[in-house]
Length: 132
Image (cartoon, rainbow, N blue to C red; front, side):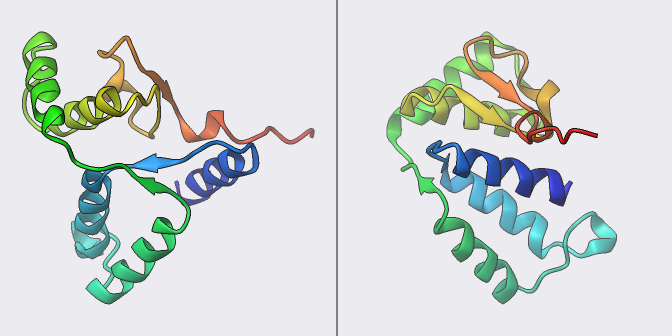
């Protein structure tokens, strides 16, 4: 997945897109990055995770947390009957709504299909196909 993610990132940057994330994305990355590899993590030390986040911060704009995100999240989880771990996806969509972001790039496309007002893109959709 690493190659597809970086390929998509490179493609978006080259096309002049503004890349945004929210603090939740950083927290979720930290969780996976510092979790042991035998527990489906990357097994990085906190220092290594910090280095990667610093690099990421140089490439993207971090949108702020705002009180409106909570209200929007509550509306989404009720409207779409969201439960379990999908509440975190709903929070990302709430942040998108509040900040006017229409597109999300994710490997978990199906997790976002319940939200008809956003465009869900898989990273491989963004990498130009080579002529073979």
